[in-house]
Image (cartoon, rainbow, N blue to C red; front, side, top):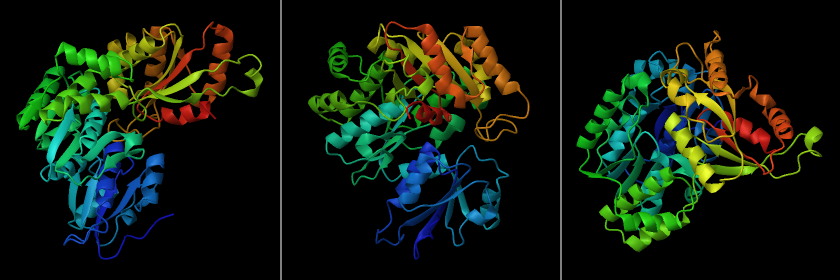
Length: 445
């Protein structure tokens, strides 16, 4: 169902509204409705190639959403502003239509950049751990009564299972992505970097350029905060932190430093961190594997199923190490879907060594990304078999299983578990940044 844009309001149209960052920004504009200022508030419309839980939520919140092939008809008449995902190509019909109508068009980072001028922005960048560190930092500021606005690349139960919070205070806590130099558009009051790694090489080409990009970001920040190195702080956080893994400890140490930079009491920071239990698709427990009828009599144990967003070799290693830390004796079964062919190609040797903590690995076909793969549509393989062959080659090289049809995953897992007869219940980790979450849902239903 579509909704008409509200009368007497500015109208903003989002091309690719279902993305995690785009949807958070859309929620910012939705939050202005009812404001009696000269801006009249904003009415939101948007388009995306396929539906998702996020687009469903945005519709319920008042956005007008078009699902399917992009069309000039999706762009509302009297639109004031068009914001597009950076993966949208210049020949996109909606973007072309808006430009022909001389509508102001901004990429997502350009729009966020303008927003950062209106706040004391705390921008958290880095190759890995941005979402978790942003979440921890946001919750620390909320607990301290600073009432921040928050834009984060995951959903938080503390924010009503959303990726956005509209606050009344002077601070914006922002997850700052580096792809295509997105964070160069921002004007942070405080900047923080979780880590720097060989990521987004489809844009940066080499690690040297990645490091230069982060150096440029640091120069734009009024203040740069680094991880706390105080051993007493590290010990204190390690004792209270509920989310496992050294990577999460490092994330918490950085959030701690940001809080102290803002003169938030140590006790408030530690109390907040002690209550943090994780975010959407970050080592997230989803339920128990529901076995096919044919296997129920043979497999009676409770097999926990987790979802995780890890899609880079460093993230895979860290996440599996975190699971191993929490469940040192239980077998780990990792079901992995690579995200973007270019990443898999460029970091192939790193992927080959990333799964060592897992007892069994199952590789699914690569998830392709519109605007980042030549001639590929999002979530669909190319006409050639390059993608499937590379995923299959990875499975072969690391001694993993390759499953061509992910819809068969439940039966495939049940067969594998029945054949293995593990003495302890395995932990099943569904891992990747694509649509693997769809197959997680099939496992637990």
